[in-house]
Length: 444
Ligand SMILES: C[S@@+](CC[C@H](N)C(=O)[O-])C[C@H]1O[C@@H](n2cnc3c(N)ncnc32)[C@H](O)[C@@H]1O
Image (cartoon, rainbow, N blue to C red; front, top):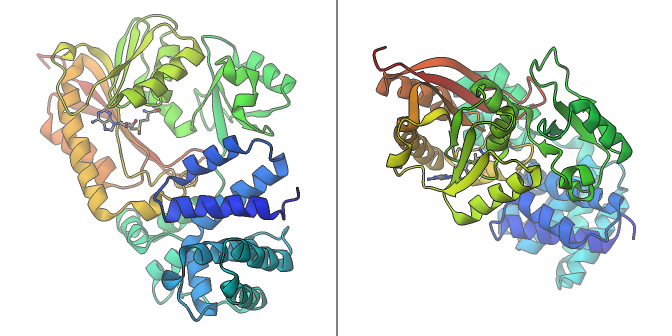
């Protein structure tokens, strides 16, 4: 089968419909399709991933283009036709490797195959129009309305563009917007309980994986981390199945770095699934102490358990516990408490491309309230002298600096030690926020 295969495009169409019409998460749908159709060769898998992710990621711009070339507006189109046209325009605009004629013809065939033969002429006409007119496209002008212009150009909902401009200014916003469209690297950290970084690099070499160590000047402390390329599935790597490394974004690795647990410490991670930060802490304890990794449902706890088992760690357990409910038995027991809380996720748009269409200002507001509620409960678990880390994977001052300042003011028994917003354009990692607090001694 070639990359032009109707079959691959049909799968892409199904993915798009699952995400846009049935509300499924794009990264989960794509992952499950790749798992189900393991017979697809590497090129087809890459094509499928690229077109599905790219079409979702650039949807606002694609719709803007389609609206210039179609007499039926995108929002009025039948869902199947809309999805076929979006993926067609994506290939025309962003994939030089796909000839324009193939993008148009395959779209027409797909429309017929899906029972829309009577609209195949429409699909053909619109896509051929786009193909001919791509060079003369006009976009909203930044000098007239930056929010509108950047929303179309970077495919970001206008409210997010406006919020970022308000929070961080225009210059930084433009950088974040550009970074949100880049491909996110796959970074891993060696499980230092099981293998040295050097031995892991050897294993990668044997398995045909290219592993590039991080620049330790830029990321001091992360000498155990690599960016990896050139493999097909993680599950196909024996080093992964043996738990010799954990896939984790660099910004997320910083949580355990800032927490800096000491041997013998008792750590509680109140929102831990699938377990990345808890497992990192447990590794840092070098077989001593204990990490309790909690999450709200048994299903989530099962995910943590799976990762603990794979990494073969003995100083960590998973437990189902709602973080909004006080657990009396944990009060003042934790040397380190991690509150990596549910958030709007605007820092991880490179990996979870559809979050930007799902979130809204009301959703953010209720998250700010939930974060405050959880922080007020779980701070009780921190011992005098202990550390509390509040983190989110978002870029939003109300959830981040705003909540950190709120916590500082409402909980004078804690002192703010460090606060850092990481932006995706600054480094390889996701947009991420960390605030580190210390609980004062009782007489302090
Ligand atoms: C940002 S994710 C945590 C990621 C995790 N720390 C890691 O590094 O792998 C937030 C988690 O909070 C959990 N969560 C949401 N509401 C919760 C609650 N009330 N109590 C406990 N966990 C909750 C979600 O199930 C989700 O797994």
